[in-house]
Length: 415
Image 1 (cartoon, one colour):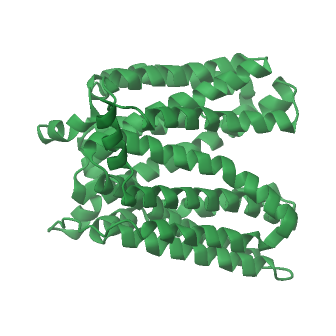
Image 2: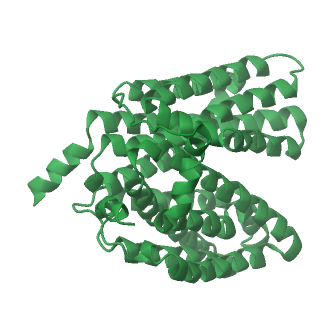
């Protein structure tokens, strides 16, 4: 049994997948460093919080603008070349930001243009990375590969801001050259990923562009997985309100706020390590998905009413850990249920749902907290998330009856 597990682990840790993980870590560190550095230096230049909101806007707009084109390109051209071009584009944009910020009286329109250019690279990069995973690991190892990939990204998201803080202190605006180097370092990982020919479709160009949307709409197990991400994360997100809870409800300082912000990532990383080192593929995946979503919604409810700092930290820990289980199973379902020639377009739809839930959740949380207060905002989000969960059980029963994710591809042939 142990030998079989070791063989599977060695199979998972192929040169291609190790290269993929290396690129994911470098990309995660580069992106989180950029967010911290841009926020610091832009606010230093303007003193206007609205300027920071525009940074997020310049990152999200390309996802919508290039939604159809990105999915089509990922399914039309070798995916490893798509991510290589994206890495070069993002590194070039960061070098442009570095040169721009060293000037006197820089033009902010140019800066936002460069951020938009970086966001354009990310609009193609993210879906392409999702589409590559099933090309380099077997279906039986897909759930562990997704867990390992998510864990590496979350780990990079913890490390990146810390590195950025120290580098800003030491080299200030020269940090962007380091970020550009980290972006370019993804190319080293991509060298180990083979170029795989994608089966091409024939037919009407418009239908080809819309094929990803149609496929998601026609497959309840995929639509259900993406809808859960959109609504449960969008309605239940608490991250944007952590500073308010820290200052006004828990009455703690910035050090404790840092712990609160990092606790979901800690839960996510620890759960990701557990999932990625399991000896066997997850069985009764649908039941485990249901339980993880119950824990996710319950952690939101506990956090909303907690007045004890340690209890709030525990709630945030389970918030991150349960989300990792949910994401691992749902993304495994989406990957296993998607045919090779549609992976890029379905991944683009997935990216749209994720970005909308993340950004929309922050907007909802901030706006609603101003009207009814932070406690009732988070409490309402948890209650509505639980309600939606029971609604999804009725409308997407396929999500909760699945046993093994690797069996899904054969099952989808019959749907």
